[in-house]
Image (cartoon, rainbow, N blue to C red; front, top):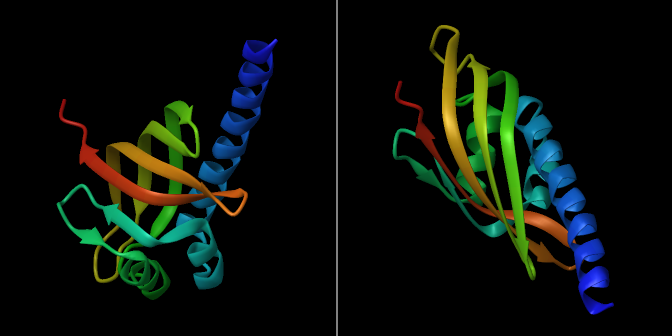
Length: 134
């Protein structure tokens, strides 16, 4: 019976993580500082595919200012692994970008996200992206 309960709890947690990931995707397109801060840890480590790593404050400021601007984002091939209060999420991230001072562009990345359950909700604590090389 413990296995059944654990499996059911796992499915519920995976669904909660998936909802947090989707909320975060929407915030990347339409960033709101308070919502970004609520969705991420104060200890956030946000790694871009170009090697840049930002903390929570700089990450939010980069989106709010338009330094990084996502017009659309599609996430596919998503997997979620929940272990206790941690979750590992991987997906393919395809986006149309219009970063400040740049022409329209695209991003085609593989992304790793690490989420942690804090005070009953899932928050992003780390993210790293790498370019997909054909």
